[in-house]
Image (tube, rainbow, N blue to C red):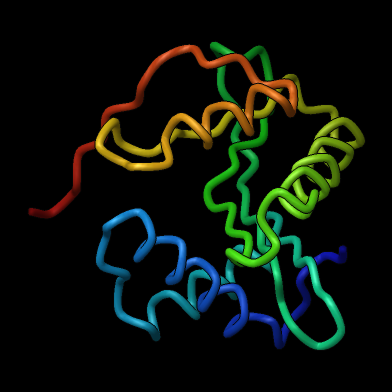
Length: 147
């Protein structure tokens, strides 16, 4: 487990693209994803789990400051674990590492959005987060800008 560094943009973008496909979404343009991964690595948080030279997990998150949270909190944007490594503790280790970073930064909490109700593995995803200390508190809505 390590923080992503400059040069890891492709690995982070590849992992998030795989996650999006699994969720039934179409990944954005690859160059845009690599640029976004570069920005997250520079400004926010990207963690990488490796086995040998292979990336087996990625967590990308942002720091957000809001009035309703009484300060800063962490938002897990993307969490991907290679299918062959699921249920082996990789995802839990990524989340625990991010929780330690959040506590060190003085964050008041960590949030994550769950997949849509139609996602086949929603129940397993929900159980994963609950086992890792999260309370499921509702759904999120979004609006695309410029469409």
